[in-house]
Image 1 (cartoon, rainbow, N blue to C red):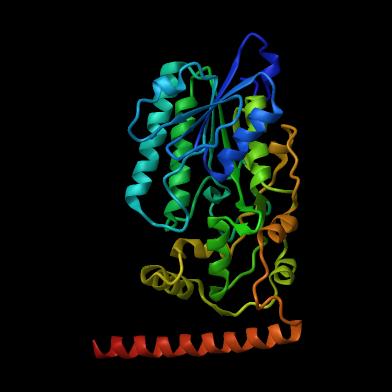
Image 2 (cartoon, rainbow, N blue to C red):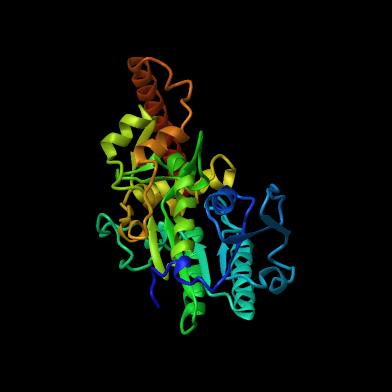
Length: 358
């Protein structure tokens, strides 16, 4: 199947695009672009949350986990599945099971109504963060998420289910793998987890990073719809932010470098105690590169409006510390790092004493 066959190349087919998760940050932007910027496309917004009504938009209040989906999808030519039950900052096996069950229901209903195109969101984290990763990763790289990061493992399982569904069918399947997504004034949940894991007691290593503005992700989804893209595509701005440039953007950070095993142990304690949503499996993604190439999505006519640096800047509201003079920030960061080091040493001593007593 021609992966770049555009909607206008099929003039006899009336385009009806169903967007699940239409109330979310990505879904709402995709709906807005399709309704206001694209002629000849009927848009059906599906979500169990409230979706803002607008002229030309068909809104369906639906629970994907339990409601009948064949009637909701009837007549659709494309289904864009953006709804999700899992987040990168919460380890919940029941949510992982629900995620896969919903994907299965969506695909079954899509097959029943004869949908010719399905688009789903994955993540660049399915490549995993490994010391031997090439820089950048292309779509030809193996899918091997780190085994103790359930969110990436679930995204990889979603990919497999969708690819298996599309195998042998007269239907195009688009799988998009975005890097860490941000919005205006706010880091996304993945970006926030990564940032939190890089400060305080952090693993050795300073890999390059990428940030993708949510508007650019929505534009990539629309490009996949318009071209009926059939395949897998990374979504990220050109290039990446090198470690030195990221340090300049972030300013002085209180950080104590420790081996990866120690950073994982600290992350596990912080997560269990509720101090910070840092799954231990996120640690490798802060010490090894997983930046991706964007040649394939650019070949669809997509281009990021925000560079990696611009996405970081617009998503980041300066903290009180960052508003202080540079010298004072450095002094405070050094003092905080020293305090963290002392705390880590004391904690290690207490653990050793407890082990000796046992």
